[in-house]
Image (cartoon, rainbow, N blue to C red):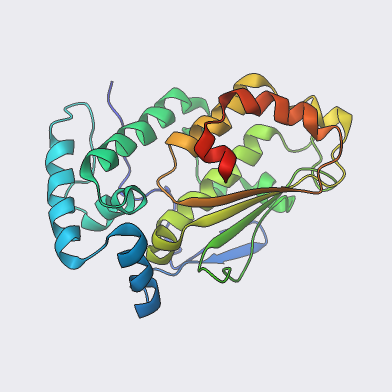
Length: 249
């Protein structure tokens, strides 16, 4: 099975350093991390110039052995994207690369042709919001509103998932986000019983598998706020697939 890999994580990134997502323009921060962020990388990720150089070389050699995996091995920045969330352990990073693309192949119905310009509907409904400012730890914050704002007859859960993928993959391009990570907040205010029926076990498993195994980004916290009683029905679908590490977040 061949994994078809684009040179960038998204397929229409010609608008860098910003990209139009509906009415929202996401500004990328593609420059080198600040001194403060570099200190975080040293403390939390073991990142040093020497270790980075060594780990990049080792990861490149590991991926060369994967004959069915076609990656941009000459792109050092691309390799670092997978090394940082794995704290520069090449074996773990190689596993993450394989799981990342295996997930894309498994869910090709979602990923085929996925790019911002084709997903205008989700962005125009303003269900997904990336806050313009990072939190005090430098983390990107993504808010997903699946209550009052979500018109489930106009925006499917698959579209919500695609939008979240695009936002988090955009964050993966930013060195500061690779180091500091991201926070995801689910705002369930106004979730109705009819909306809960849109959730299915396969969808729940896809989301959990994605967050636990297939996102090359440090998801530092996942918050669920304003959840009504009916949310318990939704959480019951997700709970069997959650490992302890994600539950703690």
